[in-house]
Image (cartoon, rainbow, N blue to C red):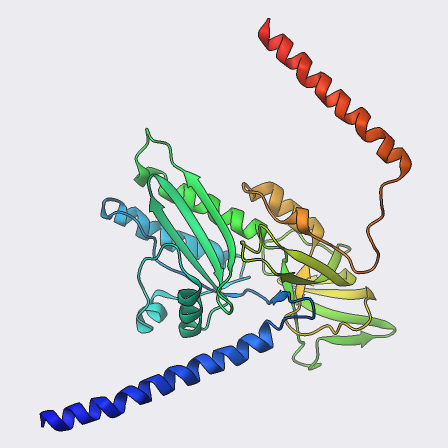
Length: 333
């Protein structure tokens, strides 16, 4: 019997490796489809909708607060209906329901494959600091990273929930798009005509301040960096613009006003609303974002500074220097 069992195990090992190869090969094909590199070697970011939030990694002394905070974070993510968050039962069924801290690329890709997710979120409390990390599942790259130092005079258990929520809102405010293009079930395609107008619909979730008349942009997000995408190394290109002409709960109808040749508007294309992005960033943002790296339009090149503007720059610098000197003198006396 023992020999038979050993033979079975010997034959089972190649089968296991074969299954792993097929699984990762399929994932590789998906990665090639979803994140094809362009001629400049840039990776294209796709819609982030299916999220996984792992239990908070913390000392056992705050385990009760950590669990309560985990449930609150999940609830906040689902309030706007922009994101679908994996349930506790689903994670337990996949045997991955455990607290996690920093993740390496291999772990992210493996967990993303197992959970069929777009992004993974980890939260951990270490050395009196609450940290949050968000990773893109397909290629394992970091999307966002944030930390908050807790006050040493206040128990960590009393600060964990508030600090975690601040990090979450900061992450949400850093996402450079506010919705995605949807295909009308009756029409069967993303873009259709109403008279002489080209139209598409987009899902923007609920609770936003997006209104009829607002400007809409369809964007492509790319990177060649391994730094958190939403904070550094981000390149945004706008290939279509439009105006909101109708709004019905979470769905807006947009008239296309202009579009760059060579770009097709597809289902799940990223929808950016500059006015809403600015509002949310000012309301919830606490960390630096990637706007300094944004190239917002393919329609026109950035205009160089005029001679008049260049002449004014030394004047502004001198005024700022004098103001600082005056402030220092006042403080001294």
